[in-house]
Image 1: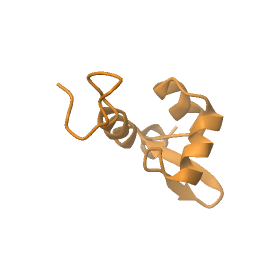
Image 2: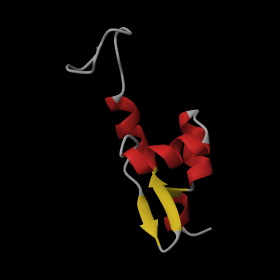
Image 3: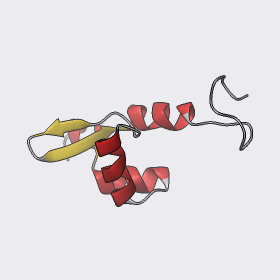
Length: 72
């Protein structure tokens, strides 16, 4: 495996890392709700740093927290 392949995760790998189903990531790509992704021909890949950024942006302090401010 080359260095570039280690930096990019498939949809299945990204979903596993996030604890989501691959179908959820598929849906998020359509709606724009999910993490930034890269398309190489027909292949979709995610950078781990983009997954971490997206996951961090979804931090909430309570269920009523709408994300308007950063949860600490």
